[in-house]
Length: 574
Image 1: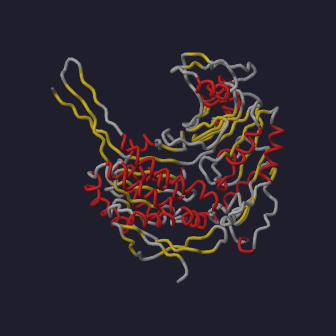
Image 2: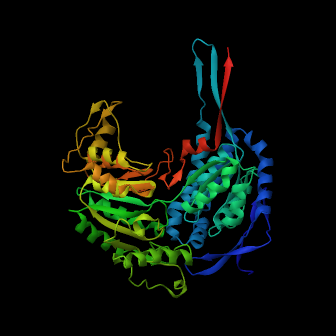
């Protein structure tokens, strides 16, 4: 016990001992490596009291001072990138190179983005003709914000909530996942080093049914921001309903990639491998359904499976890059899944698919793990084909290194299948056909799309790369892009029905060199984000969130600031 890391709650600027702790496991070895507080309602009450006391002073602190402190925190975090990445890898199971390249830099970026955006926030004003009255708005922080963040991108997503909350002048009671609490605890030390006033940020660690439930039901927490599973979010909404709390819910996804016959496979294949399996598939934006137009399907499947088999699973702490193995080894492309229970759940989905008659194209090969990793929670990236649209593999979020590849014939068919889930977070469209791109973008039940929609001067081409290059070069304000189909064989209605036939609507990807197809499909997909010929290209100025069971509300620079502030209208009679 003396050599084991023991973390404590961070309340009112101090680390406070708790009555009991729970085990935190290193996913790469399956062994306990840290002790995390098992907080309860009493701990949450103390944190809320501290946040309430700090709110009056912090909310009246000039935005320039709030910004200065946040930038100082970001700078200090950036200077400790290596140590934070090592701990994130050990705590979560992700490869250490990924934590260094993505997780910690994005946490730094979150802090800097909101620290600077608050300096440029503006209010509205209006003069009423004939009444001699002047109206203007005031934006004010709400109070104590309850933040509940997940285990897959621990510091990345905690700071995506925390940064706008404190930039807006709120104080915070946050509960990171009990499975990945260490980097949040490390960040608390930086808060004190950088002069963040006591009580502005309070961290309460523990499990959802105790610590999380106490935050959700606390009457002095008027707003909640939650990222996690849809089932948990439904329980959270029911618990928060009697208090009329302001809610932001970023939930799961069942994200499609739509790949047309004209897609550039040299770009599409490596990106789709990455979108399917990075972070062990434990990202809400990962691609778990791949629809390939029938003519291209055999070539795509051959190359996709070939590249997937090259992935190394290994020690997350190895800094040299394998396929499956120790996350501490930089050779490892994929690390370990978060827990023994989650690994069993993901493997269970594959077993269900086999019983239903699906084909497991790859994923059963031996991993040749080191002795120290043989009790870890590792799984090879798995490709499943011959899957029914009614299969649980197609309908439910798996959140692991498993993706399904299916052929489609026309545009209408694939949109219907893509939208036929309860999720609607994001999508990716691959095409250069402008008309198809716009049509599919409108039809997809997602929130986030990547496409062009300008008008005025006309640019006539079906090549999306040429289209964007010329559009950038023209010294005009308005451009017109033709948005009718250049592929008469495409059937819009059938296509959208296939893609949208799920209850999720987080994101999707569409691959085609036909810009018309890309735009058309992007419009049709019922997801919050559509990426055309790319994946996970994120601009924090743009809204992020999902349709259907993939969430409520949006996050991003403007959207997050609006959530964490209240607008008040003042009318003055002149």
